[in-house]
Image (cartoon, rainbow, N blue to C red):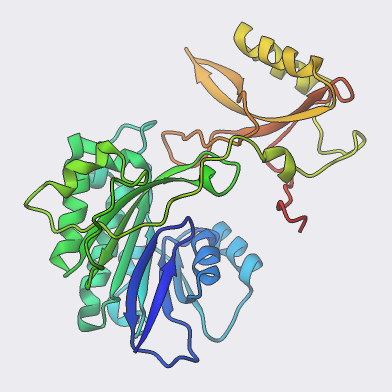
Length: 346
């Protein structure tokens, strides 16, 4: 037996006991894999993702472009409703699910876990149940923070009870990605453990805000609170360090007409914000989001050097762009296909 300190992709810590040789990394199953962002973090934390599933061919193509193919990994392209527990590789230490948020998002109709898309959470639970004694000792659900308030909190309680029914005690955490990268992307994490770590006696963690505490006080739910390290302070800047520098001759910049349409759609507050940036020395980068206000499509510019995460009722992002402004560059926004480089220059 080896003890693995598993750090998920945005900092949550749990301890799991894994019956694998020391030479082999603990194995992970990746549900609702998308383009593989969870896998990036899991592998950085020492896991080996051996199985993944998603139903969208374009995401699978991007996933393959990111990771290639290997004999030790299988990507199942198709509806999770057709996945059976007996089809999954055995001996996994962790199951990860980033299930659809459409019916839980604050921007949507909020049908909750009974909605057409977000109800696929129950398929994740079904597959875990079918795994029986080969069920991973730790199972994680990631979703939007709207899960906490969906149907007055009933959906969150139902999700925790579903994990409880499979033998998991659940810790619940709210983490914003801006603690680690220059993007505001708050998410809720349910971390189920068959053998939960010792109950923490530390003061309330920032990752368990007041609006989550009712689940820990609910006697009908089996929950725990793992001891957590102090999280990093939320970033207030850093986007400019990640943006690729492009010459004005680059064809990906918008032309004058496109830029003029953007500026004309700005509210007086938004125009003053952009004008202030234009008067500043040097070049500043800001993200802009296209929204519908009173039936009219408008662009809104964030005031800070952080990317946002504005959701749509259908899930995913609204149309987003970045804008470079300043005395040296009056230039335009570039659409959401623009490339971005990592802070380390890669």
